[in-house]
Length: 122
Image (cartoon, rainbow, N blue to C red; front, side, top):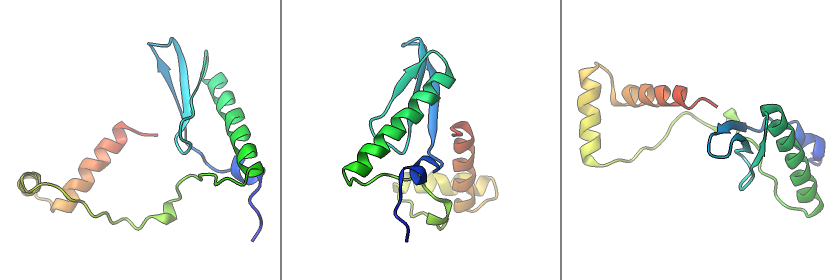
């Protein structure tokens, strides 16, 4: 197995988040797979450039110090099943709502999660 090097990590599909901040009056950005990282800039392009520089520096430092480097999630790491625990009250309410819409509880939950994920699209 080949050793993971700088190019390996820099070519992974890390998730960059860039949003405008009214409070700060600039764009703020971070890489969700890396803890405690944030940068700012006047434009999205500037923030993206800063994030890529930060990732490069982080990976180089981590490799030099033999530290573990987080990688993006991979779809093949997931099976599609989730154990979900909730209160009796919520379970009851879910069952009633699912029945109202002619769906199983699983189908109802999956549809609700799908709608929420559309709102929070990355």
